[in-house]
Length: 286
View 1 (cartoon, rainbow, N blue to C red):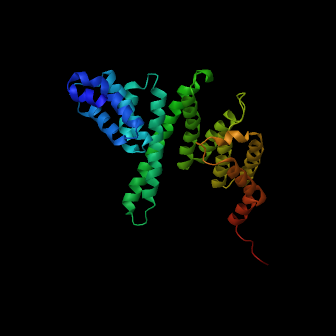
View 2 (cartoon, rainbow, N blue to C red):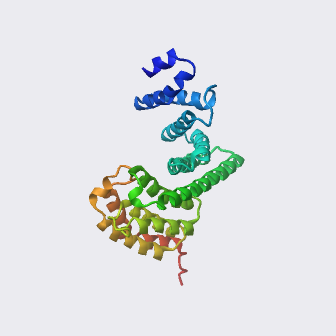
View 3 (spheres, rainbow, N blue to C red):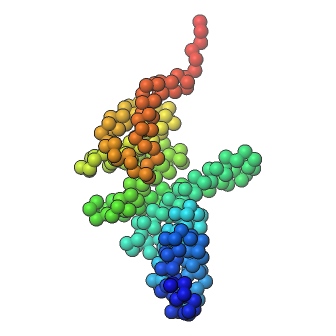
């Protein structure tokens, strides 16, 4: 129906049907068609101005589509424009989250290129610098998401906003970790662990466990194995307090059994003691 309407009314009358048509294509998983329609709205439609509501809806829908399709570099372009234009509105935190995560995930994609053995040294240096820049941009933008959403009462956040807030807390710490800023990462992961380990009156959540494990990893990177061992013990205690059903969240990287196996491995096999022994030079024999 929408296609016929647009074909019959090629002028301004078709404009209100364009974004609904793109959304229908998305619902049918015809993503290329949706992208084509939305690109037509934001790039070369003679009757649609950037100040119009139709342009706003199309730009936001296009940025969201590119983000979910993992086309992160074009997503950054569209979402940056969307944040600049509409970031102060109710869609602002969601737009900034998708922009920040596009920077973060595009940096991850660059890692694969950087590791190519035949890559010239100058190219590797340029890509490494770009990776660091994107992680910096991601962390800064996640900070804005945390500030905006944490300032609201928890009861005023919908489920998607709660997810964005949780992930923004975690991902900004991940960015610090990936930049090699381990002290900063420990501080940011500790915020996540404290917030989501029942200090707010809600049941402890697996993300708090994830944060503690990353604190362990950061301490190991710094060679602070005693601190790592202590935090790992805290992670084991927290694991026992988390409801098994909480691990059914499909957005989590590991299920409950994998977490149990990891924590048991680090404990039973004296992982930190082994790392310490490997790092210390062998004593001279008399």
